[in-house]
Length: 184
Image (cartoon, rainbow, N blue to C red; front, side, top):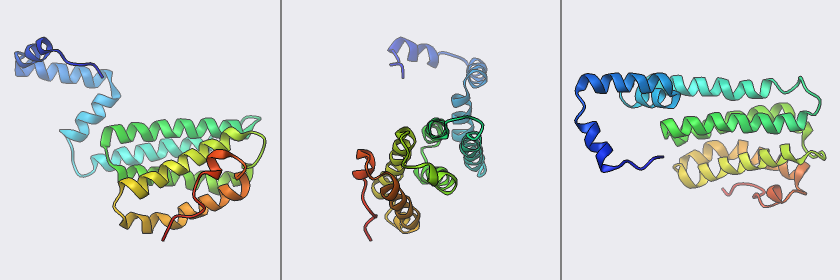
């Protein structure tokens, strides 16, 4: 993020309304993040954040659907999780909505654990590590940043994830350091 000088700020304040409009449109054309931020912050309807959430959800799910085409599925799953996390990080940066970020993380983890839990515990530990790190991120988000009422909603799926990780990949330090279950 660039530090804005006083000269820059003064020059922007001197721009006319028409020039500012042109500038905003140019910026939105060239930068997707700027477009989404402006759309969410200034042109927002009740559906704007939901539309962004649905788009991100589709992108996250599509990352896990394309891993079957290659030889080493564990390495491909680790890469797919990394790409999905990039989409989630972008959504978090634009919206700053931690509840929806937790929902996206839960969707990603549900998809991976439902379809690929048998791929855990092999010699390709990148997949196990990515899954443990993502699970830990969800745990930290739910236990430290969200209201305690959300813990009730997320406790059961997180405990299932932790159980599977400890059962199949407990030999890894990043899994061993995770709690066995979330406290009641």
